[in-house]
Structure formats: C-alpha cells, structure tokens
Length: 125
Image (cartoon, rainbow, N blue to C red; front, side):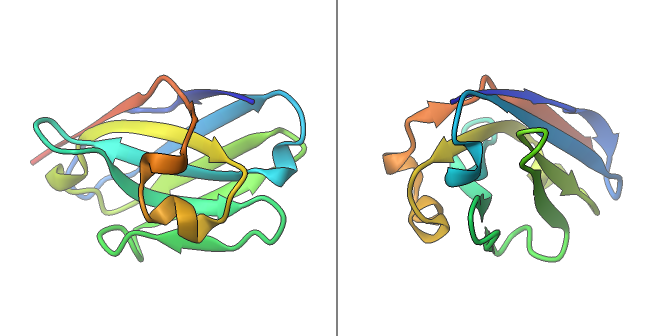
C-alpha cells in the first residue's frame, strides 16, 4: 500500500484541522492505519491508530479527547480530525500502515514499514 497525506496547514491555538491519508493498493481493510508526528528537535512519536477489521482505536494520552481518527474503506482513506490544537501539536504528521495490531503500533514505529510523505501542521500561539 502507498500513502499520501493532505490537509496540513497553519492554524491558531484552539483551532481545528483535518488530515487525510489516501491509500492505494490492495487489502486496505486489512491494515492498521495510524499517525505519528515529529516536532522540531524531538523524536517521532505515536499519535493514534485504527484497526482495519475491528475499527478499534488507540490514542496517545496527549491527544485523547481532542483528536479523532476515522476511516472510509470504500474511499481507502483515513482521516484525523484535530480539535483544540495547541502549539505543542506542531510537527510533521506521518500517515502509516501496518499488518499488525493497533497496540503494537502504539508501542513505537519499529514495526512500521509503510509511511506517507508527511503533512506539516503548525499551531501558532
């Protein structure tokens, strides 16, 4: 599967953005899809994931209650709705895919082999 993100941009603190991740290839519904982000000068970290079959989701504590992941298997697209954004959410957001569980993805990017090109999200104070 190949991934292309869109929807990043500049927003003021408290605002919202929605990222999209369009996939191409086969067996999309079999994949766990997720998002990682990397802030300037920091390591890349897990944000959220959704399992293709069960639709189970898992969120990093820092985004719980503010971000929401959803998927459309027909469109082969995953969405990340980001609300109540803060400057700490600034970073390059990567869409990822893997044939393993959400819990495994949340443990880190070691297993992730499929990455999008990244979408920049900048939140101004």
